[in-house]
Image (cartoon, rainbow, N blue to C red; front, side, top):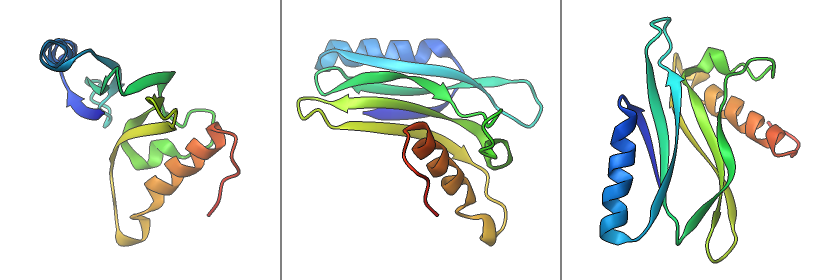
Length: 131
């Protein structure tokens, strides 16, 4: 299972997955285009890559934007996180992966972005938020 960031060309992930599949069994991927932030209007991609014999996608990925959810995400994330849920094979263990690019500013705010994302993920999963 691999998470990738800062991908400028969507074809790169597809090519990588084809190469991995040729050499080591079937692989699959999920990629989402995101805004780089900073008002530049430029975009890049995040991606997850996994071997299909060991992992399956449970729910499609989504970008955490903070819009309408009151998460405060737009204040902490240099680029919005990509979240997706997967199931490990054969155990059936379900996990949610997040790839994130955080902007830290000052020692007091060091854990703030992680806490914001943690609360958001727990709320999305229907679990009461803590600290």
